[in-house]
Image (cartoon, rainbow, N blue to C red; front, side):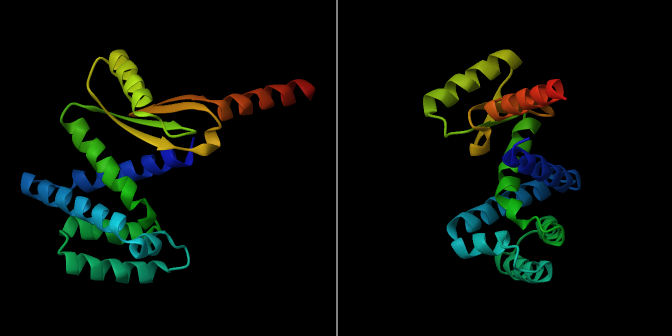
Length: 186
């Protein structure tokens, strides 16, 4: 599985956990706003990006930094708790993926199926539209498609639809061919 899809899977767990603890629409709306604000802060600040991604910054220092950020930004308690858990687990670097997965979660709640598509190169708008149309036709429902670039795939495409993974990457095909050849040689 590609690194990006693995991160998506982990982020999805955080989002599911976050939303499963919410009881009111007001709480959900506050969490959505806070996660969107947090994602915007991260996108706008290279210092914050470095802070959440650096393995050289201890978990305690990351927690302290996130506490200051949460206080200053007046983040809701559920989002604050999420930040503390992610800092403890050294997963703050997944915050952008959590924001993306939150939108996928909300789409799914509204009846739209989230789909993650990983390719070795960036897809053109035409390619994205074609893939989305094919998937939509196969599933027979609306989809919320997220695309990712994973150069390790060499070529082809990896599609994740909820818990189903369709791996049509060249990397996987080469790995399979290598296993077959080494088993026959033995």
